[in-house]
Length: 251
Image (cartoon, rainbow, N blue to C red):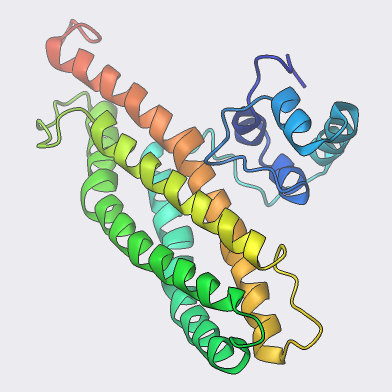
């Protein structure tokens, strides 16, 4: 499994996506906080490193012929995948979740005042994610696709008005960190999405949907923070070298 002192948990998931379920099992954030090592998270979560490693090794052995090798996926196709799967998921699930949370706040808010903050936190997240996704869909992802096309054809790209691609990427990663903290708070308030004994069906459905929403968001952020963004920065360097004729001196 590599050197535990140097290998980050984000690298574990990037190299074998099946390990994501193990980190989710132990409530370990592998997306926004993917830079931590196994030893660091084990110390923080009070988990024996051997136990966590055994679970990771078992997950790595599982056969998954349907799994996608995101590391090998061309960046334009990876951007397409994120947009058509994770962005679509957020857009589809948000209205129903808002409706359910509003309803249970009205019915159960007096007995369970934590619902009011959960609703507030989710609405803030939904608003910010909508803006965030538009920035990716109309600015960042199109430029990544443009760079991928240019590199494949050994052509030059335009000078982006945002300067280096690291600038919007840093903004997107800051947004990711904010949403990660919001859902940490929602998880804490909801007792890890465990509905109380007096919860009605809508209450239970809302908590199940919130849990699923957070899990999808973690996978979404992982694909961007740990795979798409680093590779896009590296691609920009190659394309810039192409512009100067350093990479392809025969052009």
